Length: 117
Image: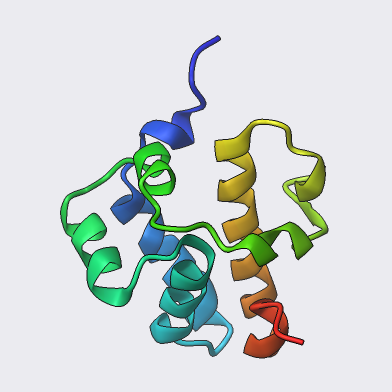
């Protein structure tokens, strides 16, 4: 089976869409970056380096320093599919990020988005 188109897109081409979605609802680029770094383990410098390198989405997630173990607490529906039921690991990671950005855009507090007790 062919890879999903999102896997081969550069993360740098998707990133502005995440930022725009947050900013449209009054949130900041810094909050989007904080969410991405929380999920993937990249620090700000490494995130910017991945954006500069035009790393594809699949590689971006595959090379993530340490996926946050609390991401398993992310539940809900994104694009009509429950994120916790997505079997393909890379697609699940992508949808986790989509869900977190949706929560940001809906005005959820950062502590809740980052699954802090």
